[in-house]
Length: 495
Image 1: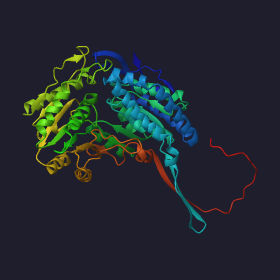
Image 2 (image 1 turned 60 degrees about the vertical axis):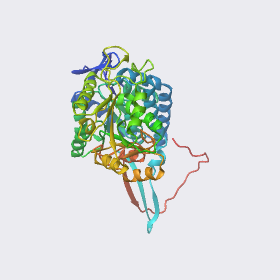
Image 3 (image 1 turned 30 degrees about the horizontal axis):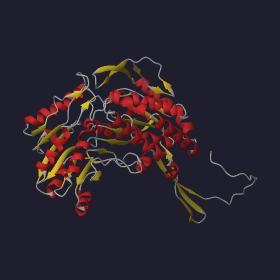
Image 4 (image 1 turned 90 degrees about the horizontal axis):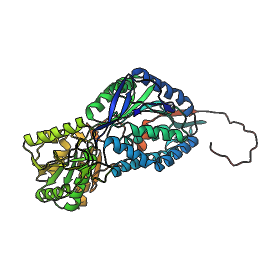
């Protein structure tokens, strides 16, 4: 199967110089080949988006919103199709893939109300016969570079708001699971979006670099690893572009002695091994305040041993990793943890699976006696590996978390309201859960971390997303009293 670019409302009809293989992670089989864009192809896509921008920016907010509503209805009706494509190419189980699409749809619904957020302020008589008012206007062509772990949800953090605000969009999805965004592109066309407003360009670093360098691309939104986020931020800002680059994570879950240990154990398993740990909001470090570590680890182990690893279409709890290369990289971290002296409680390197023997399998893995000097603690593994660090006090746990270079998400489990409030004020992390293991905010708040987890000043979606995809203007005006004429008794309508 050929997977190609979506340009100006249609599949690209050129011949690609380079392509990449797309796998079914549950079988190890090649299921398609995706075209990789050259600089010339990226230029073609940008030109299409730039041409469409002039008309789209002038389209009324009422009309834009109508199209957004239509897209929402089509997406809702066909979300199972999108989820199936995600499972087939990423490997996550179907229920998880469907949840991803549903969370992305929340941003679509938020963007349907963008008229309220685009309205400016007005001051009459700021000076004698002088009025001052503010307006927000779109940027132009904007690019979204999305990761493999959420091929639908992450692009939907950005493009609904960008389109509603009057921009035109180019999405560069991961080459590992590229099909879902092409189906979404067709849904936009079916919803009545003008050609060229939503485009998809596939490829690798060549396409990314060209999008960053192109003078007609006004902003880059990126989610992925910290080294690439830093690269895009530095290269993009040097080109004068707006950049929001969300990087990696090492999310800690602090469990206090008064916590409900059954609730904490459930949360640790759900947040540590959902989507095979391939989430930037996954809990990868459990910080246990003694004397509860032994009891909590035993409860987590009991739950882990009941998990079914296998093909995401067959009712398994956890699917494979996205590629064999990534599976082997995660397994190498498990090897390193053993070699560095961590105690392996549950070893997932040779799992019993419900699936083909050639799938990219790695079972849930649990380490105890992990120290901050170990690579499994310091680095983002991005796989089903949970590390337990034991601390003596709440303060020691907070200091441990704050000392880590990442600051994406964290959680505290406790029944003490005072401790929870103290935690949320003291912790140096962007997103915090209180008895909530994966604190991904709803669409009308904004998503983003601190420290090495975010490059740029603006988080994703919510009001910060609206500000990112628009520029403010302030107008100061003085007019003589105008005269008006004409009669029209009809009720005024928005079009």
